[in-house]
Length: 254
Ligand code: CO8
Image (tube, rainbow, N blue to C red):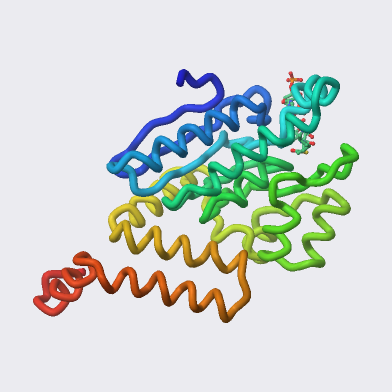
């Protein structure tokens, strides 16, 4: 597939996707999301890749859905537009390898939802997270009402979704949307470093850990702990786990 809206490259065991419509502040058109989901699928299948970074430009991770394209689509078949976009989100969400979002500048609407679909969010000091859908007379359609509520609680989610107020980087970290702030010039290097650190660790354990953490969004505490325990047992049966113990005992490092 020839890409027109994203760039894809690899650094060691890390796959990098760059949203690449800088003139439109990386507004997400349907083909951009299709390309992201396709590239995530390819990285998922590629055994040499262990982690993924998704980034935008210094000014915008993504300033929401492409409103110009949306207007054209709405006049033809709005439900189909929603369903296609939903399908691509689901494909990204299904990826078993960890995805790090490096967010600088605007992450608005569907752009914020794309970041929320990733597993770790690192932010530059200029990051702004917002769900301004309400001002367009629509509500978020790709996870924000659910993921935000489970992440930052009801009141803050209500404020974001009902007023459209965007959170700055400090607020985003304080309420748990993002894990930490990095100076803008260092954001990509730091995101890559985090991805490489993950990529160097036992892959089966990384994927089982991601799977268990994601499960907590779908289940109550007791069944979630049962699920975690099940995944932990899978780790116990692997040669990688046994070899790691031997390496430690024989002082060969972890
Ligand atoms: N769509 C299309 N083009 C955009 C978008 C967008 N979302 N955002 C920015 N652009 C374009 C501008 O039109 C402009 O293009 P041009 O140079 O050709 O005029 C260029 O990017 C630069 O933008 P600005 O000049 O506006 O830059 P500023 O720095 O002045 O402002 C803002 C930055 C505040 C981010 C401003 O661009 C803005 O408000 N953008 C729109 C934000 C927004 O509301 N996004 C949509 C959110 S809703 C959503 O994502 C989900 C809707 C789900 C509906 C259901 C789907 C089926």
